[in-house]
Length: 376
Image (tube, rainbow, N blue to C red; front, top):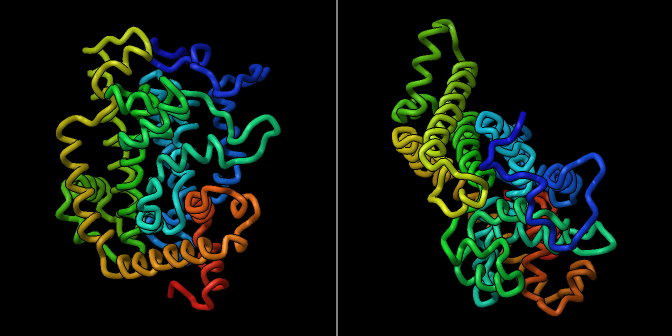
């Protein structure tokens, strides 16, 4: 398939921070994807939490399965829009590399621990992972990914952090947060595919856990419409097959909506190349109707799943584990590996070490250092 003019073209990549000769059989974005898949941080995602802590069940989503689902959705949409599938996949597989153990609970706790020391934000941490914290190559720290992949990984950034990154990399991946331009279409697509995947799998995991029910979801238009549609076509359908078929139809509807809405936006904009996309307003989007339905579903999940007493109880316990780990390592840096213990930036070194942990390793370390089991 030939790429559209507005796609990110491998031959026109802005390149890597450290120049390298091209690979004989792979373009720059394919090489990025392969480096991400072989990284230590990527392997750890299999034991990092989405909503439910890793020890709560083997069938709940992890950061790894979430990243794979984002990549699959992203590639499907990218193919229809004739933008770069390999770049979409690379961004999708790397976008959560900086997430802490225990999901957003861990991030919030680390951010509080790092108050006065630069804070902590998982998108910025994902960039730190691929730029500095992976130690796999003799010539440089990090994975030395292309500008375009790094641009997509850094999907959120405060102005203060953007200014700091810009000082070390003028005109680099943080510049768009200062001049209010957009990333390429592939990065925009990954942002939306991330949200689509979240909504779908959190419904599945929420019902599987028993914390929300299909009956409750009847109040959510985006879900109920496709549940009724599935039952109209298959009246005998029952049990989990109803849920699976509803989610499948929901996903398909959102994918087709993004494709149609984005095609219309591209036709109106008629960008000559990827840089023209960066100067325009956001292009990859839902239609207004689907956007409203998606936001309604998010509000439902926030109220009924993310703020469910059972989830908040484990969230509170997880945050305490992270806080106590942080205090323990700060007081006894020798408990960390030498590569962290010997660094001068002690607070950031502790944050980097904890952020790289899996859920189960963090729980084992907490018990080792405190003598207490932190999460029931």
